[in-house]
Length: 412
Ligand code: AMP
Ligand code: MG
Image 1 (tube, helix red, strand yellow):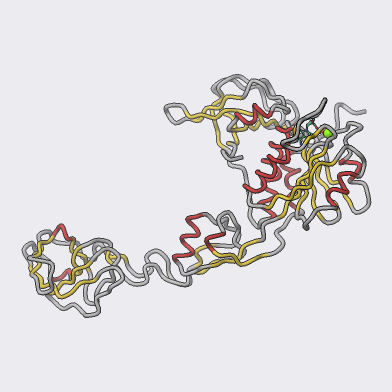
Image 2 (tube, protein in one colour):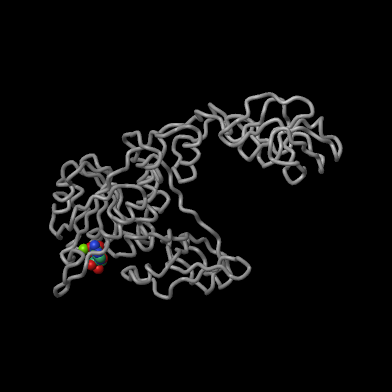
């Protein structure tokens, strides 16, 4: 006796199973200026210290604090240290060296007397400098290695490189680093009704938009999209298209053909030789017919055909999958937001409601679900900037309750 439909695989378990089989394959050496978004394959140790020697943090005079104990003390200027032009001598009692920001601190000095706290007869060596404001001993000196010390591990394997991390590695003496190879992701649309972008749909036809969305998505995630075209709704067609891929693939993504209709062939195709069907139904809305499998040795993610379902599943499954194949890790950032309207109790599927996230004048996040949640409506998804994530069987919520929200990447 059954008391309801069979349990569906939970989203978190499905994601675990997708990620378990994925790992980055090869590394390559890349110029640092080209690695934004790439994942480091090794730790990086600093080759240089920053600053390489003690330097001044201000414009003024490099002095000995012992010489400047009271206002009115006077010193003799004996040279100048500017950025890139250190002063080579040694400073004795009663002497000062004119110094500028970033210039090396001369031997014998221990403090910077600010330009504003002194008066000088003129800007020549031999000039008398009068101390107006007694400096704090040691002030305005950046010691050697303040920022980075040679040999320090400044970046660790698995780090996603950003412009600021590139600047750090460059400053520490590197020009290139070892990064994981960008995964190649094949994208295949399925459906007899699909017309390639730019075509004119005939009766019953629509423009295929999923592949364009996914290609853009894949590229934004740092992988290389590989267009596998459109497979028609015939048994074996999906397999032939995937096997005809122009380059070796690290992952195949299909859209459509994932349900139980007589024209849906992806699941059946995954029982052919060299293929494997992992799971194909998960407790998620939109996106219940999500397929995980393998063709020859390439993992396959079969996304639903409805544009919003495939896009939401791309955020939940494809993005972490690409991160894993790229040597990194991606976990969606979730925030708590106040609900603007009431919501009915949820059923057994984890729900991802298209929504608008805003901040009220107090800086509190407020989220409003779209009134229509039909998974075919690309216009609703396009206008949303967040997804409200509701766990299975979440109780009814009232306006003002806090809910968990996943902001959508503004470029995706
Ligand atoms: P399917 O899962 O194949 O039954 O597709 C579900 C819905 O998504 C159908 O209404 C399809 O027309 C639509 N669909 C499938 N593939 C695409 C695509 N590449 N672009 C836009 N809509 C699609
Ligand atoms: Mg179809």
